[in-house]
Image (cartoon, rainbow, N blue to C red; front, side, top):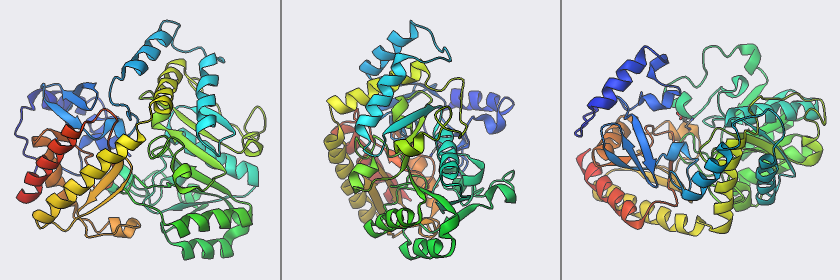
Length: 432
Ligand code: HOZ
């Protein structure tokens, strides 16, 4: 299946050497191309909308580090901000002014966030947010939705999307029954299921965590009724509503999905864009809940590198750029052009596909759709997706290597890049 026409020798050598160094040769499983076959490209550098592999191939990049690089690779103002921070030292394990700046930018942008805590990854953010929901309410049960992915937190790694779904371990070995016994799994977009769960278990539910646009089973869009039901049921029962905006924060709108859908959560988790490509995560929300976090309150959470100065510098520069030179209209134009181009290409090729998009995140499903929940997504033709993926790589287009991921457009992409992508998809889809 994985027939690579371009030169790939150096990538293969490096990936082969990596096999004895790291499990599966990678530091995160999605990168191994496990579900599409073949071996990954080893990346040398990025520039704007493009990445260059170690064999010198240039590709139009729609992964953009799985979301963080909304400005494209090496944006000059982010580079300048990081360079300035580097001259002062890398990490102190003590307060710095840069943390205030990033926290202020987040609080000003994300309506529900009155106070925020900076951590090191999206996984840490979701892990901490559910601990806080439990500590705040004194209850145990967390509701999550099948196919949503909230990082590799034990209790959330059940019926998980993203690489867990792609690599067929939605319930990972090592997650004990005890750890996940307080996780209640429901169906995305099923408002009635949510109402019933609250009728039966409401007094035990500490919180609901979900992706307010799913990126981790492909791009799936929530119904208005579903969103309102989540808000109404959590409010009525005193549970904490957590928007996992690690992917959607500063992506689908400057204020995240909560700005787009006009629903205010109690807590929000962030990551990816808020670090501008450096490792970071954040969780924040109502001050009366956040003040339960140590040392203001008693819910424990800590980290040597939390609020790292270099990550804060990259994140603040990215958010300032998004605030002062909003790319969201431009991203919508590019997203719209790509959607209609791919739709036409799929129809002309007789492929029964559906494309789902919110702003600059989207997925072409090999599935007639609509895809509204994990059961729908799981009906996609993943074998055909694999051939599509390699066809695009051979045409210089770098897409997520799984049907169960969303692609990301950056502000550095041009109309010409989008047209080149549509042209590549047209010939690829016709050849499947
Ligand atoms: N969990 C990421 C996709 N949703 C992939 C992370 C990576 O492999 O870098």
